[in-house]
Amino acid sequence: MTATRVLVLNSGSSSVKYQLLDMSDSGRLAVGLVERIGEQTSRLKHTPVATGGESREWTGPIADHDAALKAVAEELAKDGLGLDSPELAAIGHRVVHGGQSFTRPTVVDDAVLAEIERLIPVAPLHNPANLTGIRTAQALRPDLPQVAVFDTAFHTTMPEAAARYAIDVETADAHRIRRYGFHGTSHAYVSRATAKLLGKTPEEVNVIVLHLGNGASASAVRGGRCVDTSMGLTPLEGLVMGTRSGDLDPAVIFHLARVGEMSIDEIDTLLNKKSGLIGLCGDNDMREIRRRIDEGDAQAKLAFEIYIHRLRKYIGAYYAVLGRVDAVAFTAGVGENAAEVRAAAVADLESLGLAVDGGLNAVRGDEPRLISPPDARVAVAVVPTDEELEIAAQTYALVGRH
Image (cartoon, rainbow, N blue to C red; front, side, top):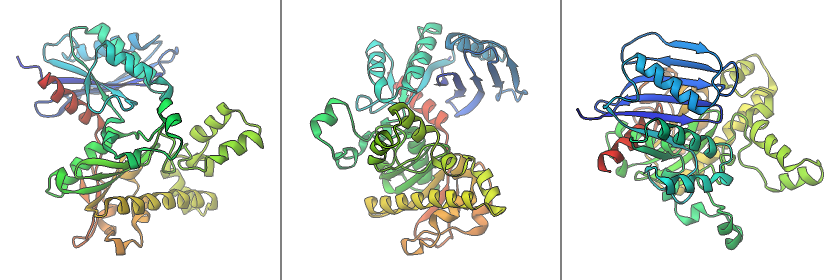
């Protein structure tokens, strides 16, 4: 029996998202989420997609990630999809930060674990949880290949001119300060899917990918390779996001420390959790912001305008970086669902070949689709992202070669 299944794990500090896929047809067999790990009210929701069964959900104490993964294994076993199945080829793990060390998916061994741990200072919120998920999965199936797929890997093709910050080189190198970028699995998947939508290979097209969710990032992809991206050393830089400020004059931090007498931790919390849309208008849900705008709320309107202004700046900047743009692709929660954001982002950019068709833009759907007029010089697309499928595909390709 050929092993064609891949379990994808995305381990957060108090949650585990998972999907089991069969790579013979890229079909989903099961999906689920464990959240509030470590609390008395932990919650597990499991959906057996393969059998078309109803979702199962229960609430109760789940002490740690080890207990969470054991609970996941039990739910999968109920559907005949247990972790002991000979059809399971590998477990693929999302790892947020791979630094410069990891440019592609990697089979995990002790050296890989040590390097991921060494990178914790540049990803203190994410890498520890990712490590916990890997180690727990290793304990459950020590005989099975564990593959780390890194959010930063797709962006390692950036030239030094894009990746370097203009600070003292020795200081930057000593502390590993450079642009790494994030959402890489999404940008990789969407850029390739956009090329396919245009009937071309990734090597033939230049694409600006706009991953717009609560976290948001843009990338410039030339011939299938990332040449620039908006997030930097951390996911804080770039676009206006749900709770993150995005681009900011660095001296604002000095000002808040000296004049505002705020601590580093307080400033960190302000910029990462109390800024962006929620800082501007008190809401980080684009649907709620649009509802408030429709009711005449001036603060919500200003927040939306700031969000769009930053987005348009990046579209223009990456147009200049690429020189020739074949498509602009919107993805993730806001990008896929907020027609008003897409329309506003390219409004009055006809001189750049960008426009959306109002009717096409209003249509909702789960498949990649063009929303630009048929004669548009630059295609504008909505491409639903699929990071789990991307992780599974990279994992399976690696295990097949390994």
